[in-house]
Image 1 (cartoon, rainbow, N blue to C red):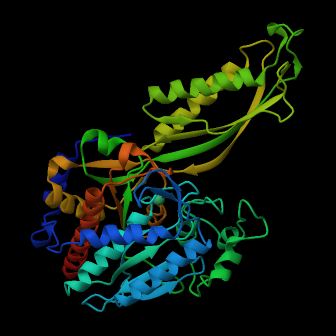
Image 2 (cartoon, helix red, strand yellow):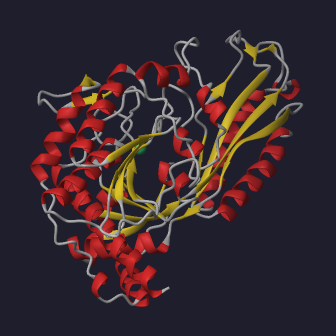
Image 3 (cartoon, rainbow, N blue to C red):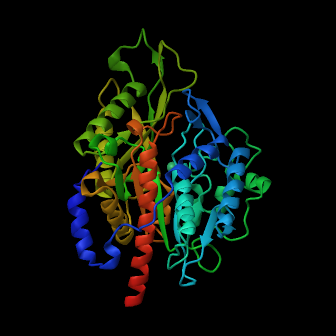
Length: 461
Ligand SMILES: [Zn+2]
């Protein structure tokens, strides 16, 4: 994880951009903090679960995608954006696009503020939800102030970001970006009920839209830019006393799966020197991957390890499988960690007793992502004006987000706000009212800044 000195970079970047009037990061509009907070928590009645405290807001959320509760918030969201004069389009993955017209009446794709309203089964009230509610508050603020952007602006609610019910995360932004075939996404089955597919749930709730799920201008819903406010889901902002993270990209990651083969044997009668023990070898491999990751300032994690279901205390296991998840903001480091792990694992495989064999597969390869400099610059300007250079920093996203997919087809960047102790995907996930408000204001200011930047740039050409 990189923790660069944000302030210094911000100034050099802004001066290089050389903007005059639009380099001021403040939009002059003020979000309504009480309305934001009330709307966010009021709508959490759909899916509230796993109470952990006395206060009404002290519950987690279990609003899995395309459940009845998710359908309720979607219908509510559709009503709210239409009240603001937005037109609503729904694509074939149920992604919801709310669009309000800009002054220019340009047919260019809208500047979007997007995130997701679905949660994990033991999720919290902020992951994804804050991003959509902040976007709504930004539109409400513009509307009540009679403020009109130059270009069209709007909101996206991406379907099945979490992948908790239909197991593919960032699923529908992935289809939109052309990275996941729509049929594959439609065919995903509910992890608890194989008779239910993502498509059958879209149909049941009336969210199988008629436009293509695509960034293609002719058939789908292209975007002119994508800004996403999200809780950090890590401890860096809190630990460094910053209130805004300007997200410059997302780290690369690779998921590998290993199968280590040995031979089952009696634990009392087989000397150590005669064994082929895959569990011992796999354990050493995992420990070794941790050492290698540390040396590279990268991350390596094993989340799944399986021994045969008929294993027993007094038998050496026959076969072990485990996963390895390697991450770093630079792809070259991810690759270097993988290479060193493979070398080390080969050596470990021959170390004990008669040795073991292993093979591996690469299940996921997600290269590092650099967000758009123009979008990042707008967020920097907004953050500077809002909290001053000491209180924000540049940060790389450790998790995947819909913005990773949108960045492949439109200028994209993200804003992070701190969450308590970096906890997310847990009922106690918490972002303070002040930080929710700051993030929302930063989102609004960034979009207004970017809209001015976009029209100035267009004017120059
Ligand atoms: Zn999220």
